[in-house]
Image (cartoon, rainbow, N blue to C red; front, side):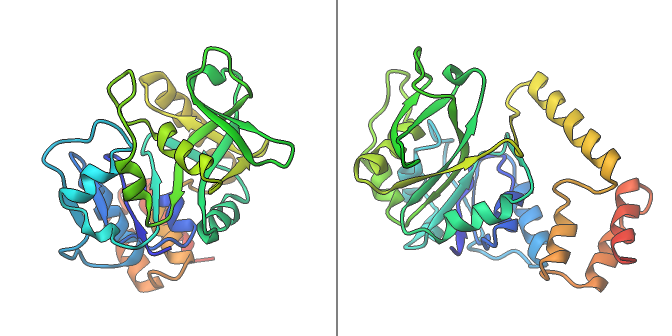
Length: 264
């Protein structure tokens, strides 16, 4: 996979560790996304890196509108899309993302939750394949919630054009995924007990994930989602570049952490 489309406030870190090269982002209000993406690859901005729509889409699935209004970088390349308020953490995540990236069909991710009625719910058959997908059902058929991370082929723009607004007046991502399901072209990667997934779309949930990150970092002495470290370990920037990035932030513990990476 070569290209990433991203909704407002998307984080590139999950797809960076999967080896997905970011060459574009769909932006409406937060252009810091591209700054992080450029940093991850030690790259300078280019004219093809961003596309801005005249107005935000009605929902995540409104990829067709975005493509028609200035995101030609999708072109005939596969697309990875992650919602910026979704936080994923767990050993082995990189490998699972890479598996999804290499498939010829669309891939979504499932996470077991206590209250599935709050999410898009995935029902799995005996073989672990998706049998149905429902958006916030009153009577969920499983405890597997659909995570806000999706891998699609280049046909996603045309598929999105076929999606019709729901009763809420939105183009639901669940309806887009259901099209792939009905065509037999959808896989599910299940994130098991060793993973943490947060939907940090509220103040309370944002505080919850902040405390989680603080606990892990304080215990292990390693940063979670440090884009400079990820870029360095993947070979996208060298030691000299990392040293320069660290020197700009030496008045903080973050800069000291970056500098410590050079001593390993």
